[in-house]
Image 1 (cartoon, rainbow, N blue to C red):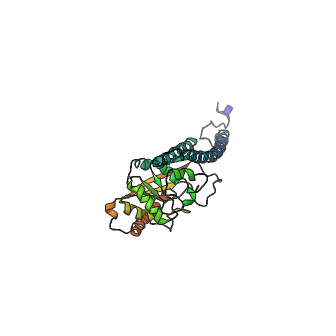
Image 2: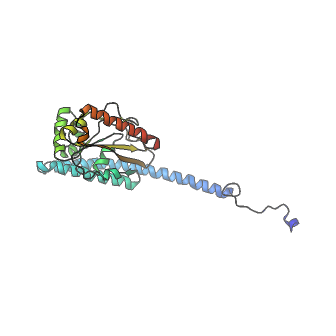
Image 3: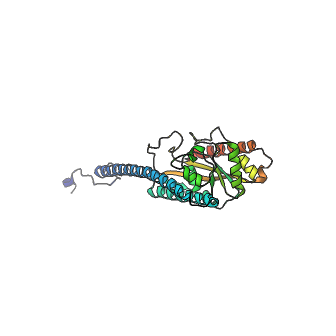
Length: 289
């Protein structure tokens, strides 16, 4: 029998490489096809997201323009903030449903019923305010004056009675009134989006003056993402790697009893230091501030 078989070596399966080059090649080809399909699907998701954003801003502002003349003045702020909440929640769910983003908002859900609180957060991207308004329906956001005058969103923001940051004294006066009425306040002390993974050097102490005058708790929140998309200076039309993961983490809570002996600048400096340290800790673990 051995003479008939000569030097025949029995077949041995040794994985996909070596003994099965055809199978290995086929699996490599299928993997390449899968990667191409995912890239194509991500392009489709990105394009749908851009079209949805244009539609959402148009509806957001158009409905506010229709509501403003018919809603009684005393109810306008409440109705406006609920409309912001509805559109923020819808947009977040649409983007998550498409697979464009993921959102870890467990700590935000825990703040759903807060009152008499000034929420302070870093500001890495254009998504930041929407993350908060999607979970906090009565939140009052301190807003850039240019956004209040913007044709795509100004009417809705004015209906929600969001304070503008045009003059510090007017900002503090109007925001303190909201805080004393029990509404939570959201401020980004950096004033503009971060262009890097740390807190901006320009850190405005207005939030501290508001909290101290209104006798509010200061709640620090830290926002991180896995992509620089929507950061200051990033192109809106350049497709990022998808999905983008946003995480909002609850930080230190400073009740009035802990801050009453501080000046507003001392409180602002303490919050800035805490945020800077928190971002430095999170960045090495994959979070991008």
